[in-house]
Image (tube, one colour):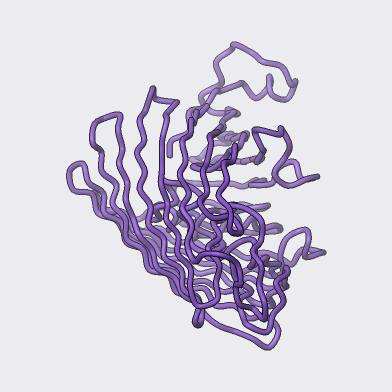
Length: 371
């Protein structure tokens, strides 16, 4: 989604003062961000209904700095520093980490592509998030636990990333990340690849990411212990590899989107795959009113999840909108109905959910502004 930015001159930013001067055409630093707040009703959180004042639901709250310097010959130095924050408490999303979402520096050229170094996203975020209903409706519509990274919860430290120039609508990329010194600081080695194609109303994308030594909290992220013999606690996965393909086609005011992802877990002596199939439709009722509806199905062994979401969004201006959404989640086969970021971990016995109810509904009303 387009971010509306306030441009500041590079010299003003370095001096940490606000200037009314117009930034040079060749070099600029841009301040941007998203603020989202609202109230959500959950029909089933560990057997109880609950109203919650929460933020960052339709889009995670963030502010960032984006810089570009033209060094001649069609080449530019670029950087992004981006922080996630909690609106209601004023705290950072990740304690002690200033730029928890992105922090990278690189060089780009329209002929040779872009080369960047730092904390970055993989190609699920770059190439496939645009086809997911969570991209419009937010966190309660993402696939279980966001294990396929579509919501951007995988922030890759120590990454070297290359993205090719766009050639006749086709663009490719690759990423390699060195292991973090500690798992709590990030992940082990990461290898990722991506491919995307755009031609008028048609958009296609593909992505693959292989992550070693990744910490996962299945119970609170997705209502699962992954495998029956694992405890209902955070675990360290020796390998998490994901593959995905997606596409969209725009016809008039209607945008049809299809998505498939498959994530393979290796945890101790256990391993298994979680395929997810999704279809959703975005319809522009009026220039200011957007309606979206979608459904996905996911499974891991005998565990199954189904999610249906409706969202209505009304733009008050180019920067600010109000929205309401309703999401129904059903889990079975030993899994619990847990929305991403939707509450405390449920109760398990021998890897099987023993709480109350196999489904939960999240109804939200919110306000979002961009800057």
